[in-house]
Length: 135
Image 1 (tube, rainbow, N blue to C red):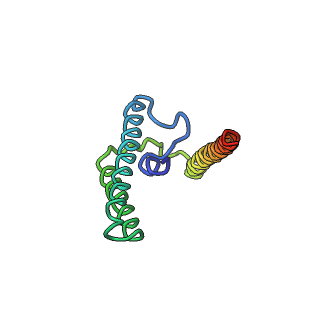
Image 2 (image 1 turned 180 degrees about the vertical axis):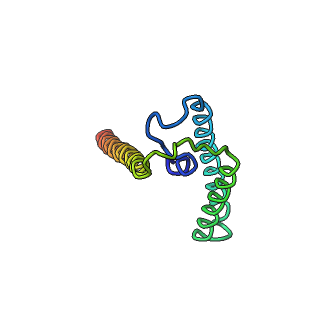
Image 3 (image 1 turned 45 degrees about the vertical axis):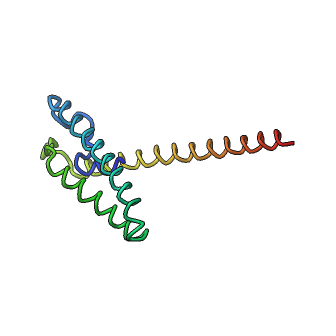
């Protein structure tokens, strides 16, 4: 979920942008996140509808195409915000953006693994409890 908004509004190092546009940048970022979630929901509903007539593979491709086209179309009409000064080192900017994506991947991956482990643990306890009750 972090990749789509960062394609339109990539992360910048602290104090690189104009402080007067923080509100606009934040609103535009959250707007593209909201739009992306809404279109993802629409694509999933489309996939469920299409898989009966098109099959799983074609329905999946159609849903992905729907998502990409709609998000691209909406992102095209959002304001362009490019406040990085020309003299800012491009390699530093690129390294910051890659590190930002890596941090997000580690954080969300760790949360996903923790959630999976806790869910499995709760399911094991539930099974043991139901076996004890059935004795």
